[in-house]
Length: 200
Image (cartoon, rainbow, N blue to C red):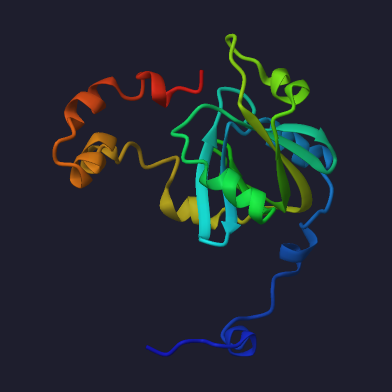
């Protein structure tokens, strides 16, 4: 296998970027991007740390982030598995990327920036739902933002090909593969309604 080892060699394989691919990049939240983000209930958060990279899905039943101002987003960290991979990475290296999706839309909106983590009750308390609030909030300072070409979602048929989940392993099966004593069937029977899977 031949490995590409220079940007010059890489760029020689491709045409110049389409002008619109560069024009679409903004460095502050615009009204249209704000409208799009407000419709997104799902985001993939990517972080980087000394042990490598990490990408994690985050979701909510309303907007997944709060737009605070033209450069600031708040992402609540709701109850999960307590691995804290993303949060640990942010403490050591603030670089983050966010990839927002809206069901049915072929576009994806991407944000690159820097983040910090806060447990300030004046911030976490503003996200209270059903008497609960997140332990922490990820505060993202936007550095660049742009929409992603629709080709990837169109090619994959992500929103149009229906439910493909019948032939893939369940959460319980994944765990049982590593721990043969684990009752995967019981886990799946309660998932996603068991207490540890819920944000509340």
